[in-house]
Length: 486
Ligand code: BG6
Image (cartoon, rainbow, N blue to C red; front, side):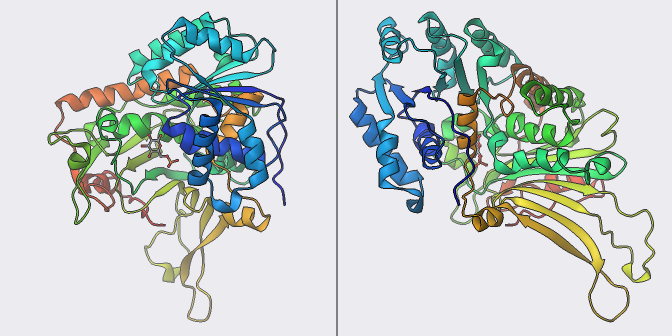
């Protein structure tokens, strides 16, 4: 069965940094898939730009190779590939020279079709390119600009970037990608909350004991050492992906599923976060060597690095809905497994009427699984089947999106497929607004600042669940982390 798609109008997409890793790994495959699913209109143009000397044919060859490498063979089709490559064009562009911009203007022509400029380049070029696009007279009502993290490294730099973007573009033209928002399960979290009556009445401090948000990765930082060592897990993951997940979990129902209605509610959550002042509420860790696996410092090639590859923290959302409910967040590299999930643990029953049940608590847990095996599970307590009295057992209602899609012959789309098409359609709902990014930094900055005088990160074995102190963060509260298991 073909995927249900709404075709978009013909558009131009200019990819700055088109020969780079993000373009090859994510954008080109995502656009190919949209064409295969029938969403790419005739006449769409994807113009790669970079400093490399290359012609359109050279770029098509590079893109074709990216398809072979990053698109599963069963999804490749010769005819679709030919049509897709036919949409590609290339312009050698040095963004620091006026000629480059004149050439781009010439290539784009003067029609008023939607034109998105995707800045798949290092952040230090964001300001220069935004200015270049605007000075070249390339901004009209149908122009959009796309940037992706890192969006600053603190509040001051995020503000400076927002100001630079605002010089040439309206906020409604700026698309700040957090690719977690494009993940199928993250969108499903909103459907689960706001298209069902079942959970929303329970979605508050009266019924929820606590929330755990985990983004555990088994990979290390090999290949990104110098970049990552200057950033760390707090800036790389918590400031954006984990806080966005927290926002979607904690926000009030927006009046409509529209960009500003959704983003206003997320912003309120960020602004309701209590400052994290107790150092015991944040644990940062760094992996050490384990057997064959190198240590963080070896991979970063920095013997004295104090950069964290792991963070666990206890956040509190100070509002009526969530007063007293901890949100435990953790993320790290080189953990036991790759698992991302949001788990809502409900309060236990106030009184157990089953004598055999003992003191063991059986709380219901709703787990929204982002990866792997996207889906939702709800842990329930049931009677252990068979004779032997009233013994209780925990069981799971389990819904796997992948299985559901497979049954309909569809594949799980990558986050970038949804996000790139939303840019073209002009839908900002799944993109961060400038004030959200700033509010997130405003909460993160003091935590990072406090580390200047704090002891070194706690070491944990590569392949483990993280440092002991992270376990203690929950033990102290009489709780425990969910296992990081696939
Ligand atoms: C990126 C981070 O934003 O997200 C990486 O910079 C991280 O460090 C990646 O590995 C994780 O994304 P995903 O989609 O693989 O969970």
